[in-house]
Length: 344
Image 1 (cartoon, rainbow, N blue to C red):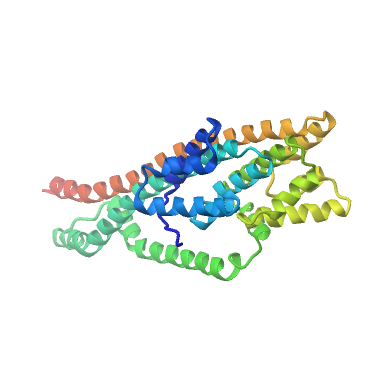
Image 2: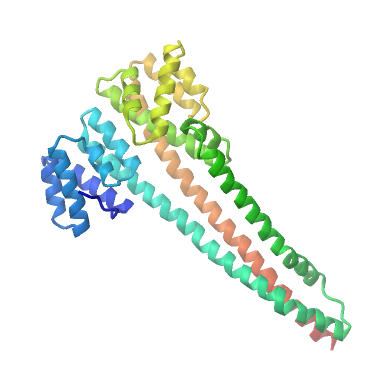
C-alpha cells in the first residue's frame, strides 16, 4: 500500500474536524472514516483505505495518519489526546490548529506576494531608466546647456547604486543559506529554538507558541490523572516533533538533578516567564491542570492578536515604501521636462 501526497493543510483540517464531530455523535472511528470516504477523490479514498486497514491491525491513529503524510502539528495533538482518552476532542483541536496554520500561511504568502511583484516591476523600470531614459536626459541637458535639477541628480545616484544594493542583498541571502546548510540545519532541536529566540519579532511568537503547546498538553495530561513526570514521559515518547521530545528529556534530567520545574522553565529562553508563575500558583492552589489550560487559551489569543497586528503594520509599511519609490521615479521623469519647458 502506497500513500498519496494529496492532502492539503486545509483538507487535513476538515478531515480531523469532521472525524471529531462524528465521533462525538457516537460513530466509531472506522465507521466515521468509511462514511467520510464516500465523497472523496480516488487518491484520498486510497489513503483512507490505508488508514482503516492499519487501524484494524491495531496501529494508533497518530501513526496511521503519519503514514499518509499528515502535518506533524496535527499528529501531535492526536497523539496526546490518545494518551489521555479524549480522541474526539483531540481531533477537533488538531483540525482547529491546522486551520489556523493554513490561514497564517495564506496571509503571509499574500503579504509577501504583492510587494515582491511590485519590487520586481520597479526593478525592471529602474533598469530601463538606467539604460535608456537617463542617458537621453543627460544628453538633452548637455545639448541645451541646462543644469540638471537636484532631484534628478539624486535619482541618478540612487539608480546608479541600485545594482550595488541588489548585489549586497544577494550576498546576504547567500550567507544566510550557507549558515543554514552548514550550521543551523546540523544543530540540535533545542539549539535551533534557542537561536531563533534571539531574532527580533520572531522570538515573541516562538515563546508564545512553545509556552502554549507545553501548558495545553501538560494541562490535559494532568487533568486526566498523569503526574508531571508521567506527562514528560509522554512528551519524550512522541516522535512527531523532535524539539518536544528532546525538551522533555532535558527537563526530566534537570528534575532528577534536583531542579524545580518552575526554575527550569523560568531560565529557558524559549518559554514565557509567566509560565513558571502559573505553575507555582497552580501547585499552591492544587488546580495546576486547570490553570495551565486557561493559560494556554490566553496565549493562543495573544498570538492571534499579535499576528493580526503585525500584518496590519507590515503590509501598509511595505506598500508605502514602494509607493514612495514610484513617486520619486515619476518626479525624476517629469521635473526635467518641466525644467526644459520653463527654459524656452
